[in-house]
Amino acid sequence: MDAWSDLRRLRYFAVLAEELHFTRAAARLHIAQPALSQQIRALERQLGVPLVHRTSRGCTLTEVGQRVAAETARLLADVDAGAARIRDLVQGRGGRLRLAYTRSARGGPVDALVARFRAAHPDVEVVAETAWTAPNVAGLLAGRLDAAFVRPPVDEPALACRTVDTEELLLALPAGHPLATGRRRITRAEVVDLPAVMWSRDNGPGMFDRTIAQVWPRGGFRLVRQEPDDEQLLRAVAQGDVIAAVPAGRARALKVPGVRLRRFTSPTPTVDVGLAWPRDTTNPAVHALVALLG
Image 1 (cartoon, rainbow, N blue to C red):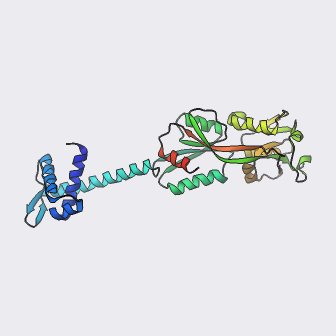
Image 2 (spheres, rainbow, N blue to C red):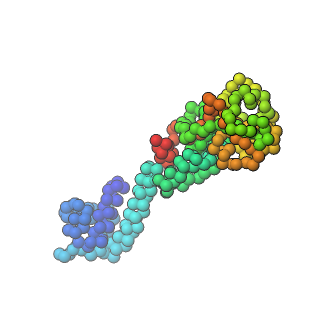
């Protein structure tokens, strides 16, 4: 006897134990009364004990039948709960999502996407952390993360990446800098050879190179200082020695005193924030998150 047949017979017995009447139990189960009787007899033969006393008016449970009925009810409840959890997991309604943010792209469309996911899949446990793009990519490749926000381009064939947002790069200047006055846009020629601050290229090589290529396309990037994150980078600018090219969202959100933000002339420099995940992932929660990108 296979396990599925055992479960079917136990379900038949559970209904019969509630109705104590073969005809009513058969009607609830949508099977013929003789078929139900045959299945109960088969279950009794399988267990080696009688479970019911048959009478002209219905049936009663034997002493063993009462105990089997109680155990059957608990077993079927566990089976049904487990089946529901499996359905939720397959449909992205359960399970776990190990997600990493990138330090330079909190707020805006990134947080909105995660909020939509949490609202649509409240049973998924989201385990979040924050790091730079490079460690996020390493975490995905090592299997420690299920999905991560990154700053493209990401040159890893094992990973898929979709753009979540594109934001403008702004020039951060000390408040007293000559270029900080007025509202005009800044040309690329005006920033050539000006002392600049940047975070380490190791944090996100793709974004680092894209920034330099757009703001200093003909060279003249003069790096004199490195800082660990955007807030410290802007604080360095506020001290009056250096300039920096920074994503608009992060720069405006931090609002560091003593810093003026200016736009560049056309073509507008931009950087993307993307969602990356292993191409071969089988995690339904990842697929559900990606689906929200449209």
